[in-house]
Length: 480
Image 1 (cartoon, rainbow, N blue to C red):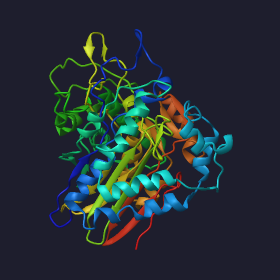
Image 2: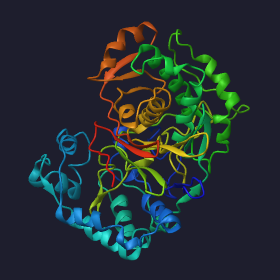
Image 3: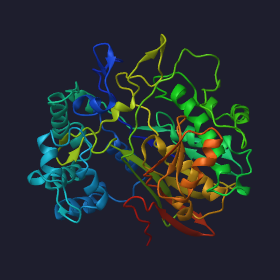
Image 4: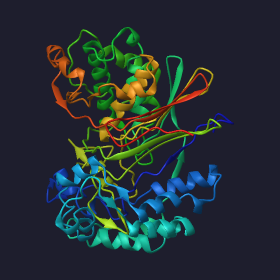
């Protein structure tokens, strides 16, 4: 809110149904394989995006709710042109359940063939759903026929049936939370509180690198990639140990972004030092927690908006994986967000913070971010899809603007690099592929791969708005 210079955040993360238990993703005494767990009803969480949007619109919206759906309804009725990327995702047939469920198979494989690029694809069922939500609000979704259809679809799925109830839907609440904010050089960087980890981990990476003279480095140099990967590995080590839904885990996240803690942690970073797998830090007195692992896939959406009054919004939303759980109801796919929990509830007798629990929100890497100058004026709005790599995509882009003095589009265009405390990934088909030998000499395990970010940002500079959209996906930057 540019008038009061106040930042608000709304958490519309999915919740686990009341009937789940910590061993939800077990077969006998073994955890399920992620690709097996993702399909069908077991992976579906109670959707929260609509409730979060309605909550925010009720507090800040100026236009009537029922007018906000016109464009989406029209697109659903008249159709959209199938993009090259969507056609490719359908054609490769990577989702193990999309052809199995009749409604999804009919939509994505009409007459048994995958959708073709350039085809005009209509979705009458979605148009009808949106028309009712526009007229009746989200009660139509959470307390009406849609909830009943989703519950039946989840519970009677032919693969991995779940245990969802209409009460799970009726009790869903979007949460208004305080943002996670901290100083970076002369700027203030703000993001989402847990279970989103972006607010903590994007900031950790920046703060861990604050002692480095990044401006003297080239953004595509081995020197920068080396220190960036080290900072990212340190941050991801903390993420796996400590970050989870704070309503269920009694760990104050402020300790993870404490300047003294991060200054001490940054001593592990050395531009001439060999990379090594990082261990979690010690931001707290010893806690009875242990490391957990979860899979997060890069199929998410993000948009950044600044209006003529200087008000801004940064939204990241996801159904997870490609095509979510594969189940489809009333024209839309159901998520598989419960697979963002750690499948193992304990290790070595100690509980995992991000274990499955009833009503809990799974950890995510979503990182909608805003950056303010020393006077408190907004200077950058940014975010990205990309699964757990979102954290690195956003942190690298912010560094591009603040430290390398690039505009937002130039920063988004930079070759991507990630390290999730596993290996250093360099974007395939870019100049930084050539850094592989130099980084391997510094001890980095290196992989050359597609890094499909979908960054979307707005920079405010000298009174002008500069838009940036990732050329790796379908997004564009527009203004009027």
